[in-house]
Image (cartoon, rainbow over all chains, first blue to last red; front, side):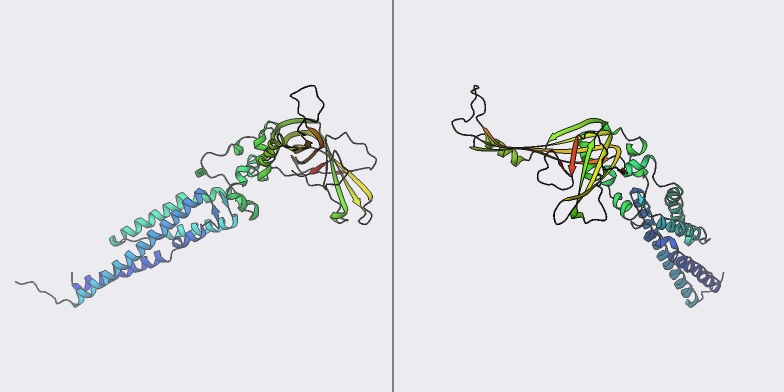
Length: 91
Length: 308
């Protein structure tokens, strides 16, 4: 496979990961905890639910950042492939 | 647990939308596998743990029937939920994570006359038992009227009584044994359950200038409930050193009583808010066991003061 095709594949994957990352970052589940606080309900079950939603928020934010970092790494790699000298096999 | 139905419904709608969003997140990229695993976990947490409980709460009727006695009970009134329910009109449901369901929710309330003295006095303190509101004439200023309440019970059950004399008065009583002048004061709180009690209330309208009674309006109701009566007995005595009392018993107290007073105060706590019906002024009423006045007036012996 040529480096140009490989670089384009990496860029395409990076775009997809960025899109997924931004979808996660803007999803309603991230801000859900704000609606489930003591203004809405109070008690052990509400507290457990509120803490679960805080966990959901933390995990999704971690994944959003991780996907964005992975996409950046892929884009860097694609750029490297395009600028690197072509090595021909020595016969 | 206590909850605001409107806000909880908004949370349910938002959760359903969030679940839909999470379900639509897909990727075939191996680099997104970890993220999608977390998305799946989030979907399960919201969809399997939080949302079903919220739906159950919204679909069920708020705590009622057997729970009504629980909402009025002291443990609930002293809980953090009480204010939210009473002041902010939140609803209340038994939370499975709260531990065993309070007995008051599943069991019928015990017969009132089987309650203990401590239980009843705690219920009075926490507001579970609501005192009878003395009727008033709305057309006259409060200071120009006096309400009297006469209580004639059908059946009286003594729940219990307790010496509530303060330590200071007990010390004074002890000191009176060795003093020339003695002051003995004894306070006792008694709680009774009264069945089929006839409560006769009379509103006396008084002329503000001459203080003469202008008219009295009687009303009556039959109800049941608890009454808390506080008796105060006070004796002032002289203890002359040589013994002033002429007595053949050498061990008898040589004290000479100078003044004796027995007064009482009390409050009636009806089981349900009574509805007073007017009575003709000349109507005869049963002989009351207790008579209370809304104001303490001189020359009103044998009348108790309202309030304990």
